[in-house]
Image (cartoon, rainbow, N blue to C red; front, side):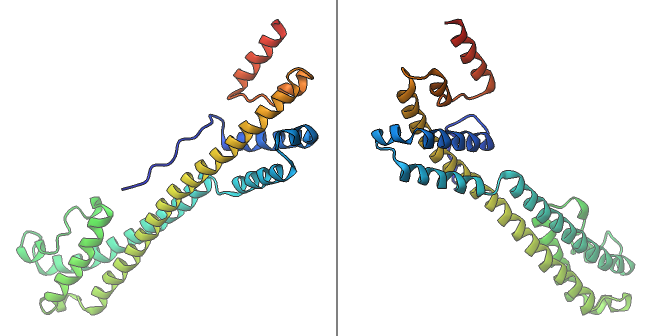
Length: 231
């Protein structure tokens, strides 16, 4: 069963989360003498920064989708190559047998262009197998081992491209899960840092207090600023 990705604990984008964390770390460095009184010293701050750097260096979804698209394009090219090889053989078969005969029907190439990837792969191998069984009947129209090998080679290439594409799909799922997990970890640490910062400055400096306030959106930030001005 496919593992479900964890839920994000924040509503901001990953780049916004990273920038917020970096700014909070800078503020904490400035106020480190106060943070140390809460047991949040320079080593923990360095560890937090390292976590943020690791998060920043994770491949984002655009990168993973791009890799996935490249593999899909290669898979589609391999599929076209296989269809071309099958059609080349079936042109010869049609010269020998009418398309309504049992010998032609055995190849199972009806709706070749509409087949799913697994169906196309299955069809290619069936065509090669049936052609080999009937090779003596088809020799006079040019069907030989080279023609059959062309189909089998195309099947191998197509199957390989299918597997690579599926691997990229799984890689993307894993990357999303890893990014969510890492994002949640740095968000949890950000909350701790900001709670300490607010506690430090709540009665000392309103401007510095506000620097530790987290907002889920610009609209939230504007509403909070408006509320303060109205006080």
